[in-house]
Figure 1 (cartoon, rainbow, N blue to C red):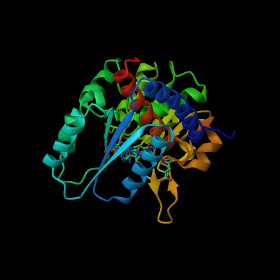
Figure 2: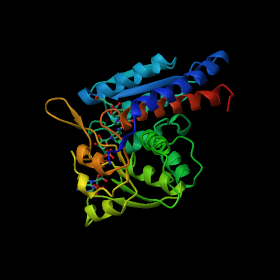
Figure 3: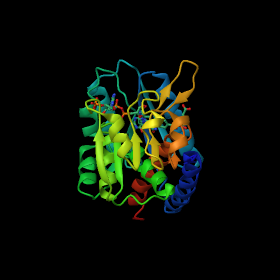
Figure 4: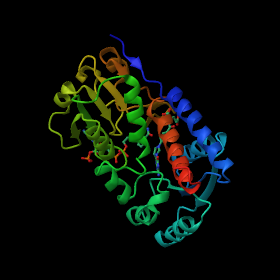
Length: 285
Ligand SMILES: NC(=O)C1=CN([C@@H]2O[C@H](COP(=O)(O)OP(=O)(O)OC[C@H]3O[C@@H](n4cnc5c(N)ncnc54)[C@H](OP(=O)(O)O)[C@@H]3O)[C@@H](O)[C@H]2O)C=CC1
Ligand SMILES: Nc1nc(=O)c2c([nH]1)NC[C@@H]1CN(c3ccc(C(=O)N[C@@H](CCC(=O)O)C(=O)O)cc3)C=[N+]21
């Protein structure tokens, strides 16, 4: 069997088309959706992501306001900027690009973002709402993974799902979304005793580890669906996922490529969250 490739690039383009329509409706009501992007320091990977987000935003009529701060920025300086963006009526969404330099207290900064503008879905208020099954902003990467799973056409209800990774931005919200979709969910992490055995049981595998081709193709249960969140940059510039793609593709029924899988979905879901916030301001939702 050779797996169907879940084309995140195409799915993201479709979602962005829908978001663009909704942006137009906001603009007709006099509300221009606006995302404030805060980037601290000069990490090259972060610069690439931020540029990509701002480009996509501009293409569909969302205003992207760029706030670049030096690597020496203090927590208090960042808190002051966040407070100003919270108070700015024209700003619908605030994204503070992670990771932050070590002297910045990321927890304090995430807590300071107005939950109604937290388009990343990282604020405890939004994470808590997700736990309760009453989501406001759902973290973009897990939201994108759920859309790709819907496209894979498998019934999640009753399926065995394995999430590898338990970060607050990917693994934990992903597991919550799968629970709400009635899957039977296992969360694996670095202390998991026998990862291969867990993978072998799973109808759905979501890998969010950050280790190149860590999930071996031979572990995959034949016919399983594989979502690869991992982004590992090789010395030659190539981007590789957390799953051994070629071998996994031979066993799975559907699989996301890297690049062109989850990554573009993350950006589309972010802009989806921005328009959601703008619709509230425009009285459209
Ligand atoms: N496509 C996209 O849009 C995005 C991609 N990413 C990518 O996804 C990956 C994960 O990101 P993120 O969640 O932020 O990463 P973190 O580093 O925060 O979390 C990694 C998780 O993997 C677990 N882990 C580490 N080693 C092992 C192991 N040997 N076996 C099982 N689990 C292990 C860790 O376990 P423990 O908790 O025990 O340490 C941890 O829970 C990265 O490659 C990142 O670049 C991230 C965000 C968005
Ligand atoms: N506050 C915050 N929010 C984030 O959402 C956030 C963050 N910080 N910090 C970093 C991670 C990572 N992330 C990616 C988004 C898109 C691609 C993406 O578009 N990837 C393309 C390829 C890009 C390339 O080739 O470099 C793809 O997979 O096809 C990747 C990674 C968002 N993150």
